[in-house]
Image 1 (spheres, rainbow, N blue to C red):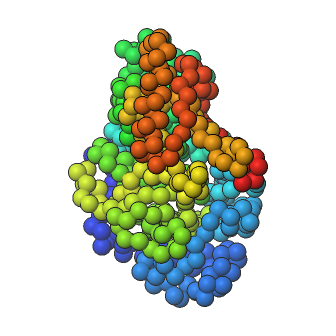
Image 2 (cartoon, rainbow, N blue to C red; image 1 turned 180 degrees about the horizontal axis):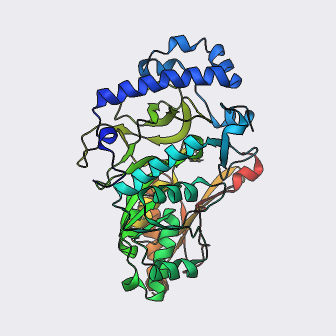
Image 3 (tube, one colour; image 1 turned 120 degrees about the vertical axis):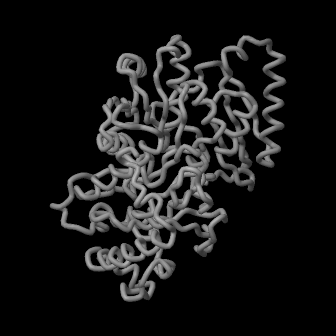
Length: 435
């Protein structure tokens, strides 16, 4: 087996996994109690002490942590080791107000890179591969995580970061990159650029690891066709290290959560009640091996489903589905819950490009709902009547999916600005008015 496939861990019987989690949880709770006054107070307010936590069956007794807690405790309030033991920080992107800052000891970095190495190995990467890391570097965790994971498996790493598409394509061709790591929206953009330049036959990619933003299986198919690779999902968040918390195997049917490092729960986002495997709810993570920044019962706001059905790959760690939306990114338009992922599914099923933008506004106390969708070059060359008919078809398909009518505007190719990082899919102008 390849170096970072670890059968003694990844195929561990479920009861042994739970036993290991219990042992690590008890130690982690004591660690947090002893070294994080902020969290100790939360536990005291909830009437819980370390003595109450005997194993994972007691996890539900602990209070939740949220991003509001992280902002309130900024910058050092949740640090569980002396600052002198920290070797790195990362920070979340796209937040308002105070940014969330996560701290890492060298041990934390080593474990995180192990997790990313597992993800690369599951995608078929070995020391024989060239891994082009086109995630952003810096405070964002994407570049650093996959960079470290690539080193762990002994692959040649191209730390190119995002942007500068001409250089991306030059290195991809000249260095014969075989694995691409970036956001799915940037992968789609690179596929588009490759087609325009007639480079498809010179691209040697076999696999791609794409994360950091929501994407659908329809978009996966589009990327695989454009780039000629197998596209794998990866999940992570800065608060729990970064990418590598969970990853897809060759089955491409959910992401295995690294349960030797994280305990996953699904809760009712309104009541906090813990739900059973197979039920849809909000994903909650507890970090059981992190030293510097250990979070217990952290509410991710991602909506998904967990399942333990046997996987063809042999891994026994629980799988999470692709996030089905985010409870905090959900749009409420005229009283209807709308997720961007639903819109993307409809557009791609209708043969449209993955380049779109949702614009929500409020006029005369009524929500407006517009979707700009970029046409392909072939569609753009069609007569106006065909374009108008397609807009009507999309309006009908979206209403069937969402239960609400949107105005669809088919726009010229290249009209919507391309993203080199996370795509800006939603512009909610109502936020400007404080509504």
